[in-house]
Length: 381
Image (cartoon, rainbow, N blue to C red; front, side, top):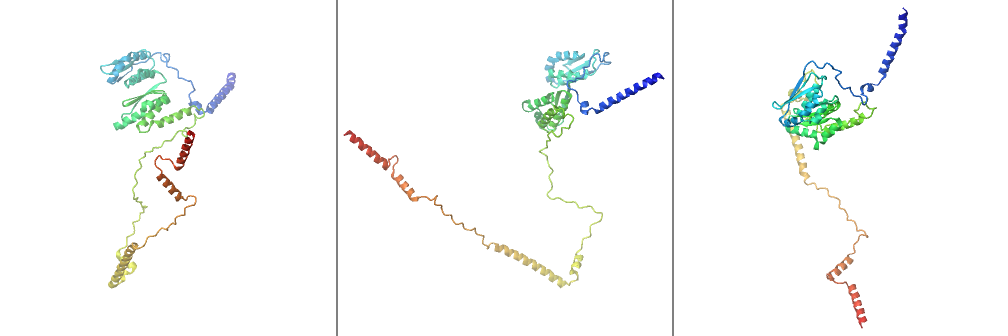
């Protein structure tokens, strides 16, 4: 009895502590729970985690094109060395044109065979060994995107693939810098190696490019996202207000008809019966007239129409004899005293110019010359 009484308050205290811890966890921000701390890395998978090894042997094989044979021959010793560190065997069959990887009894990592399979797939897709070997790291993944079946027209496919690469590979280089991935465009596939978040963005950009969306739009969005990620306050907020909204300029609008038929409202009742000629005559009173009176009415209607047509015709004929409206005659403005030209002075100038020979001296210059000559003669005497 005494022990049960002593344990009672201890249990109560333990429960209260548990409640306080639970409340503290609930009070935490969701952003703290969702974000990964800076510098944190998942611990590497070691032999201590799986000391007994694997139960069965697993293997994967892939074919490679003929033009890759020479390169694979050169780098195959390096491939075997890299895989032997993880206790995986690799064989190259040049006759069949295939590469095979398989686990051994010493293999302890169950996922390393999947990474070895990705390694030989990347080598077959023209990725260099230096880049492909990175797939054996834990924080690196790869994605081989098939683009051959996305566009039917071959010329259009080549243009869009070239658009993804860009002039001198500038677009591809920008995408690599923004996503921290290595991207290789070869034939009908795009191979990408890098972190998971980067591969997701690369796949989106590649598929959008093949759907005729220029990669520059996605690159702009990625640049803005990278700057926003640096701000710790904006991590938990929506970024839609900061991201640009691009509209399609070449939207093919459906041509609308010139004459639009407006549909009438549906009514369950049938339309009213149209009036016959006899009903119209009864309503106007013509039905009760005699044949001679009806004939006279018709003749009067015809004469009225003829008179109206005649008057119209006469008006059109008279239009030719109506004089046009004349414009008012504008009086010439008197020349101002300031701008008047002295005609007599101009005449004198013209006469002088005619009398003067080309290169001849003027009258004043001749007089001066004469005076100078006389002075010289006097001095000589």
